[in-house]
Length: 354
Image 1: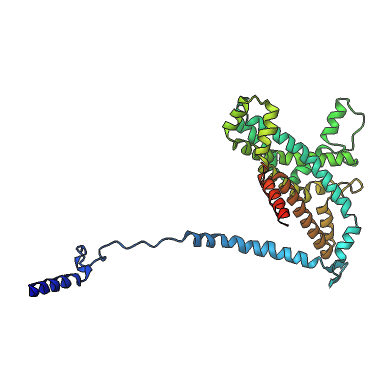
Image 2: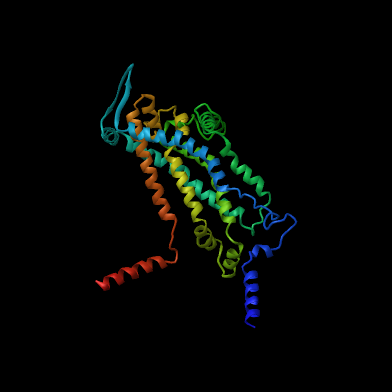
C-alpha cells in the first residue's frame, strides 16, 4: 500500500511539474503565440499635430516676438535721423516716454476715442437690431441669405478705396453738393471736410459701413445658438419682445458681445487708413482727426525710432488694460452669486476663529 501511494504521488508530481505551455492550444504554426496576429503600431497623432503647427510658432517667433522685443528695446534709446546725420542709438531710459506725455499724444488719443465712438455706437445698435429681426422666427423674413450678402458686402471693400470714394463724393465739387444745389436745398457748396463735425462724421460713417455687416453676422450666429426652448418658455411666461431681448437674448450672447467690443477697441486704436487718406495725412481741420497711429506714422517718417517704439508700448499697454476691463465687465463667472456668498462665508468663519 505504501509503495502504491508513493507511485501515485510520483505520477502526480510528474504531471504537475510539466510545463503548462505543453497543454496550451497550438495552431498550425506549431508553437503558442506564433500564429496570433501581431499588434499594429499605433500612430501618435499628437506628435504629428505638433509637427504641423511648428511652422506657425516659428513664423510667429520671427515676425512677431522678435520685432516686439526690438520695439520695446528701441523705446529706451535715442535713435533718430536729422537730415543725413544719424543720431544714436543712445540709451536714455524713460526719456522718450516722458517726452510723449508732454506732447500732443493725449489730444490725439482723445481724437481716436471720439472717432471710434462715432462709428461703434451705431454699429453695435443697428447690428443688434438686425440680428434680432433676422433670427426671429415669428417675423418669417424671406431671402435671408440675400440680405446677409448685401449687409456683408461693404466689409469686402478696402478702406483706402472707401476713403477715396467718400473724398470724391463729399468734396466741394462732388456729386453730393451738385445734387443738393440742383434740388435748391443749398445755395453754395458745403465744405464737409472743412469742419470738425463734418470730417469726424464722415470718418465715423465709413467705419460704421465697413464693419456693421461683420458684427451683424456674428451676432446672428450667437442668437441662433440659443436654444429654441428658452424662447418658447419666455413666450409661455408672457414676456414681450423688449423683455425677451433684454432679459434673454443679451445675457446669453454676452461672450460674443465681449469679443466684438474687444476687437472693436483694438481696431479703433489702430485706426489709420480712413483718416489718413481722407485728410491727406494732416488730420485736418486743426489736427482734430489726427489719430494715435497717424502720430506714430509721423515718427516713423522722420526716422525717430525711439519715440515710435515708446508710443507703440503705450498703445500696447492701453489695449491690454481696456481689453481686461471689458472682459471683466462682460464675463460674469458667478451669475447666481454662489461664489461670492461662499467667499463671504469663508471670511466670516476666519474672523470667528480669530
